[in-house]
Length: 441
Image (tube, rainbow, N blue to C red; front, side, top):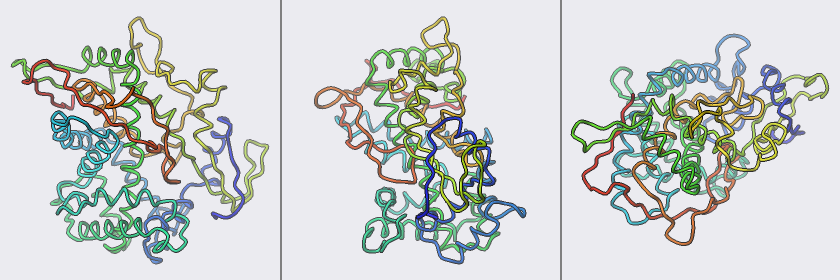
């Protein structure tokens, strides 16, 4: 599958044609083959994953895991519960940031968000933060080795660090699932559903631990670079920073009667903070640079013109799609959040303008649409909002710039920066007695 002809699709119209042919041009076979290389689960588990892979004869393991994950992360209550837990955990790191003179912004985000986002999914028994094992750092060792692991050529020798990290994380999640008790272990609905389906299909705890290593990529690998670039773009553009702060103060911040506590209303961000939301979308348009991939299950005549042969692979690079001038205009290469705003009388527009579904695919599309997109959107917007309300960030040296991305993994869409940005964290309030909190309203 990974050594045959590759068809490259760059037209927004053909993107839609590929999405409409989800039976013949499927994502699940890619996941089944590459997934084994990524996680290192055993052959028996691979057979379970590949059985009824596309759901032609009722549910299979992959389709059921996907459908239950989608349901768990589409429910408003679950999304807000996960987001609330994550932001509650982040509060400690935000308070600590006030005490730091300088931070490496990406490294700080990576450490804090890795721990907080996974705790929101797996609860207080989260294997990545238990017992001082520093498995949050091990995950990023694994992530940096993904390309070598996917190649699957002597991984114990050529991807020693990543292979060792994968083994440690898998063992920790094996223990987690061995002690998982439905109804007693406090976790997200997503973690509960995965445990129940693994048990139903006879996935052993060892393999459940290995499979969870792959799930971590979906939870962490895209959202943290997105958060980084969201903050960098806002602080880089002083006009955008001012407009977003004004929008947040007007629509999403309230004060307690004591006058000392200021509260960021998280759900309101999604409903009323259009400029912040537009900035998030523009960050994804600029920085979601990976590729969507499909396996050709049957000979397919795409759009009535192009014959795709069975057994080949279709690749759709987002970097081309998201800079298509026919879809985005002559300024497609510019960072301009206002392109996502409906024109209004005020400074922030009157709503979000829907982008063309064929030209904006940061979360994929069709049957492979990212199930975690609602959580990722709300968490990123909330963290960016709290940062810009509480802090000024100034570069320690020179002027602030937007670092180029570094492609590390074929399994992710938003790449980390090639170089971190060291910043000085300055509290905005004149007084030291102001307390900031998140609220899910």
